[in-house]
Length: 402
Image (cartoon, rainbow, N blue to C red; front, side, top):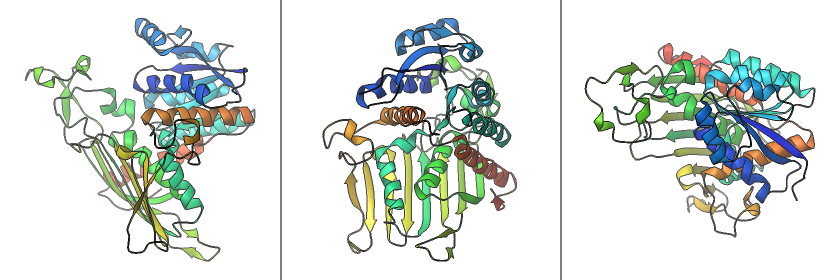
């Protein structure tokens, strides 16, 4: 049974991620026993009419038009940051210094320097019992969590290869209007930070190995887009005339890089050569809607995952069936991560469940007085990889240490 003691949440931002987080805060205590009862106390946004409409729709008790007011309020315990990356550092540091717990969307910041400042603030606040976590929600997909369990159990042996892709196609239309995600000053980077960050975090988390070096290529296919933000999400981009004002796209449309992972010790033996990896992130892969893929090959077996078939983990055990190839594991059994709190065996989960599991893990950690994962330090490591990719691409794909 969920405790009656409240955890009063103040959320900043109410668009796509705000809606996903709101659903998670409402849903988590209805399916999981939590040490604290999440309370949707207030949501903040700059547009008074917009934030009020969002509060009514998403279930928030009150509104603010300045995020600073959330932090000042005595009836707020946790700040949930669902805004563009250029605001993360200022909001998170202020909240942590005010001894508010913080959940911050990924990527943690728009630069390594900002991420370092946030991590220092988080480490300082942790000494006062304040929790902080970065929202890499794909960690909470049951099939990926099962993949990590297999690696930890040694079922893959020594990790040798990692290949990760995140493929979408929602920007393939060159007349799709400009959004903040295409403005480097707000988003930090394009496909690299928006979706590639998820692949980097998942690869490091599942394998337990950090990336130590990269060689990269970034590409922008459509350098200008119509300045017609009111058309975003409405379709019908063909209505735009040839003289519609266009703005410059200042981020990457596609990111490709090879990577080397840190050396490891396997089965108590000597250090082995680090695993190698290949990463790809694009929003121009026509026909791919949300293909967040990860494959890991080891000395004893392999696993493969694709979010477009998110309830399945493909696994190959060289000892069990050397000639049979991969077998599919339907991750819908009660013993699988998170699944036992949901539906009967065989009934799959969806995208929104990752955010609910994120709330569950965060609230449980706060209730138990420990720091949740991924920490800001974990997210800083991802930020360093993102920076190394950009540096490598800017230097003609020379090898760049992380």
